[in-house]
Length: 147
Image (tube, rainbow, N blue to C red; front, side):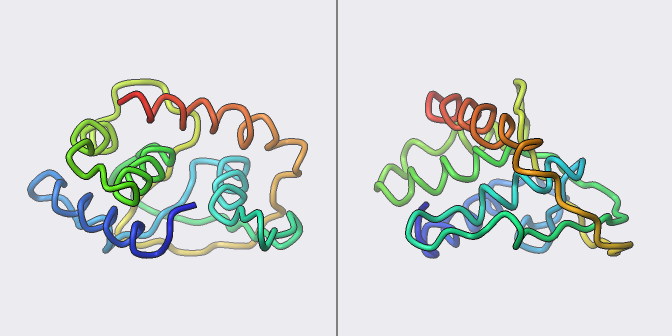
């Protein structure tokens, strides 16, 4: 995964490219549409070859929110990768797809200005998220690379 500077750069570029009148992405909170999606996103974002996070360490919460935007998780990673590789000139299509998705994306984050945590719920099992995390998310990543 790209480092903290690539994440910060990606966040800044997404904020600068947002539609006028919308909230800055950096001023929102991210959630998921389901327990399964939330578990998969947490597993993807916490993945590390050098310091693996055990599945049991993932915590998932049921929340109440008013969604502002739904965007593909793989797009953020692709944007980070392009910035980290010095390919800033090639980020336009990726940014447009994040703010105005045109295709089917399996793993998406839901942005909201705030949320209320209602309760902690059991995370989906590794078995339940395997296909979403390792197959569908990888398909999303491959698709993002071709933007």
